[in-house]
Length: 374
Ligand SMILES: Nc1ncnc2c1ncn2[C@@H]1O[C@H](COP(=O)(O)OP(=O)(O)OP(=O)(O)O)[C@@H](O)[C@H]1O
Ligand SMILES: [Mg+2]
Image (cartoon, rainbow, N blue to C red):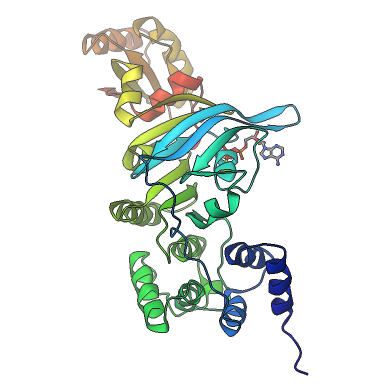
């Protein structure tokens, strides 16, 4: 009697326990099985593979609804009574510093974590009572990277395409398309183990987009990427959105939220502390921002102390960069006063600017601290 492949018995058992194919595949990838091994068994046993996004969820205007979600770890509330809604289409950003609760919220919404209390639905499916259906209707990038180190980038993508039951020629085309889109053509036929960190991340993301999901969650998709890779990724996200995908992304980069998102939720210590379009958030700061660049960085704090009475809010000194910023509603007249004041104390500046508020300023005003990344 021929020996049964260990995966075959696992799949049979998992199916008898009511797991669907997508969950089984996800578990196998997590357990370290490579896509080509899973694929060979899936094809051999002709197990139907579901297509993400093929769900029959209601096509309402709202794709995510969160009502009073709390996630507690002992005393710590990673999410504290969070409520929000995300409209279908476009990019929505969850912006917040380290530990704000961004990943926790994404994990709750993708059913990887159950909330302590509250309700949430994605695509009309409840995160707790309809977790299976919810999972087959979304894409989640970067969580379970299905990248096989030994295979080339092209082989990896073709493999994933075959897993989703595209024909061999469709798989080839889709892989070629993604390699071009993710600027991986030059490295396409090298083993993935020779890829740099940034290339690897792009391949991970490409693999999660073989089948275009209706709803895609991206948890800090560009953290650690160089500016070029980040730019490539932003364009890919824009293309996806143009094709009808709704994207929820988390980021610590204010510029990323500003560039990509039509709507932004600002999260801090498990609370939504502000929300709106980038422009609406910037208007909350009001007026202009005065920005001073000190020639001698050691004098930054002193300069902030000298000018504090001229602003409409507190100045913020950054001795590392020699920059002081301060909100003001006086218009250009503040420039003369500030220069006179600094001059009287012999503090030299290399630049003085009056500009519109940025999201950094918004964050500073709301939280009293910066995101510490940008
Ligand atoms: N399994 C866990 N057990 C205990 N505390 C946790 C656990 N997971 C997260 N936390 C805490 O919950 C809070 C929110 O964490 P979360 O990972 O959601 O933050 P984040 O906004 O994604 O941060 P980052 O930008 O660093 O990824 C943090 O204080 C974190 O330490
Ligand atoms: Mg996180």
